[in-house]
Length: 303
Image 1 (cartoon, helix red, strand yellow):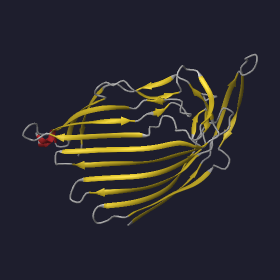
Image 2 (cartoon, rainbow, N blue to C red):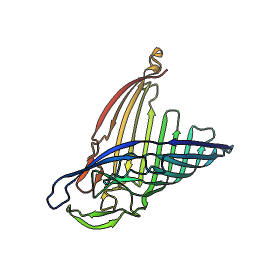
Image 3 (cartoon, helix red, strand yellow):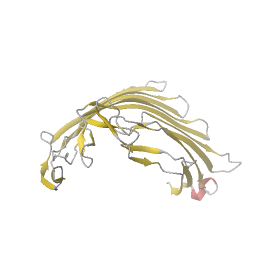
Image 4 (cartoon, rainbow, N blue to C red):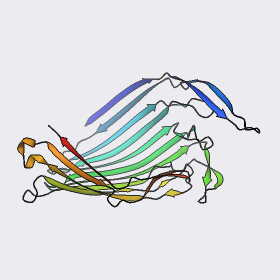
């Protein structure tokens, strides 16, 4: 059995200056307000820690558990000039690792529960500012496999599922309708965090060609799947899921020229079918298009 313990102490001290402009009056005249802001009261220092343990069985199975806390200072202010509290959190994780005896195969699985406090989001009433969304919770699990199936075939695969929600917040947002108009206001509490997919999957295989055919050459390919996401903090509509295909090849010069051992050339093509897809949306008026087909190569040398 192995035990891991760690601790960290942070001290934060910063001062900033803000200027805000406003024309919300009957004459629509622009007024400005400026001032200084400093570290959020009571947040100047924080001690965080982590602990974990893992037990290694003789037959290759290793269960583990870990717990950790976090602290990240957040600069800037809300639209009223109030400094943001630091992002603090905690994570619980339990998992299994299995190394198949006598084989180059590793299988892992983990489940986690993460809480983050003072999570910042775009202020829907003041789009140029951020707002404190309170506590966000993420629960999920992931499994992965990394295996040399044979001497010439390597396989990598993983799947993850995550539910990231606004667990405790006082914020509300206007629901957005397909025609571009706005519906009634709704609470963000219990809704899924926008832009975060619940399902992701990928599988990738690499095959080294026999020495009698093309010594030193390998070909590979795989598929990536990204599940649907929501466009805003009240989940007005879904951004569709998408999947992409990738292929590639690489050549090890050392197979033909021993003096060039460690020199490798690689060519890869992502989004092979040049699929048109949307990665995410901000509201119902602004969406981000994914990258089209892309070919790239490189030459590397390891020693």
